[in-house]
Length: 249
Image (cartoon, rainbow, N blue to C red; front, top):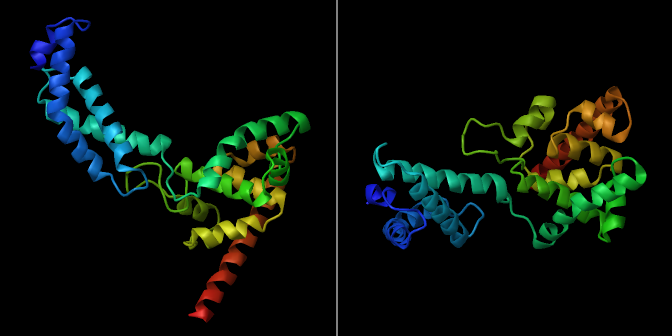
């Protein structure tokens, strides 16, 4: 069928009909691949659509001289689904209100930065957007989920890829043992605006200390001290929380 398809003009009715026949015959395979990735935070219908896009791409790109179609189509569809998770999916469960706040953050950050000549604090962003400061902080953290940088999620399906917890641990071994993401989020919200800002830029925006220093107008050494202070306070807060849970247990 593929050799016949390649012999036809792509703008012909015959080409479209034969391509549709091929796609229809392979739809169960696309649906099967979508089911393999269900239960990871995205709806089954969305995954089916993504897998079918991968199927269409496979039909379009397949060279019948190169081998078996299934051997080409399956990795193509799986790759499409993985890219969807990497680029468009929320890696953690995020409340609807935060999903609504998060898209406004970028615009608000740019507008406030242009007015003030520096990066906005969470309080300034909250005032700009007309929302609670806590919502801004949580949306920043939730945004890391959209970028697949949550505390326990990787940016790929490779088990060897470091998690966010690994990255935190590389900078401060005491943070390596943080497992309770919700407690960490609550502790982050207790930090002063400047410390919150630096933690978010370092770990959720992946900026270097030099880049942070340039953005907020202080020295790199000052950033390093503030970052150490923030991590120390987070570590102490997490330790208190763990001790409290142990006593309660």
